[in-house]
Amino acid sequence: MSIRTRVSLGPHWADGKVLNISTRGMLIHCAKPLPLGATVQIRQGSQSVSAEVVWREGDRSGVQCQSGIAISEWLAACEASPVKQRVEKRPKTSVRLPAEESSRLIARQLEYVAVMAVALAISLSVTALAASALVAPFHAVEAALGN
Image (cartoon, rainbow, N blue to C red; front, side, top):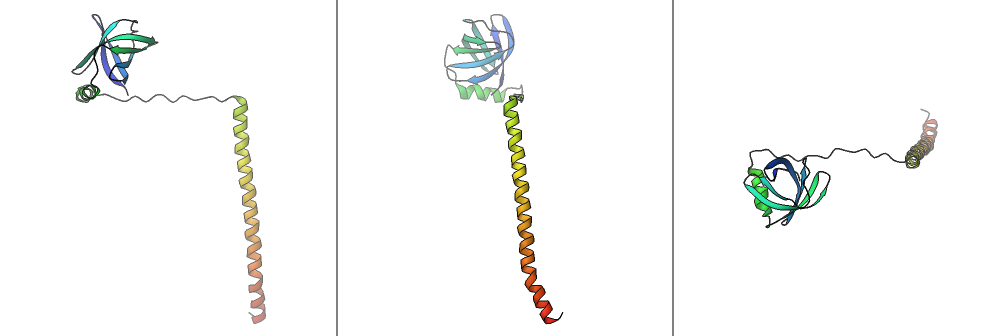
């Protein structure tokens, strides 16, 4: 969830995003750090709540609302807002495996390819043997009939 909001700290306003919402609080991302213990106003469309900053970690803050939040009304105000909301996708992060793990995965892949190659060779050999075993009687019948 990512809902664009405006966050007020006294006379100053900043852009923010609600990342999580409950009936008693919100997780807010705000470019301007919100001080612990501060009372902020969070506004989105026609909805507005006052909340106290109870924790902060970097640009994210947890706020506890002074009154309950009507989540359905808050989300309805977001949909009715003229500002188009968008859900942001988190960038894909590549995880670099340790060298031992990477080597182990490559070895398993090579082992799989080798087993498949052996299985293919065996199946082709069995097919050739079956074909020659089935063709021999037909040749004998053709020779007996003189064709």
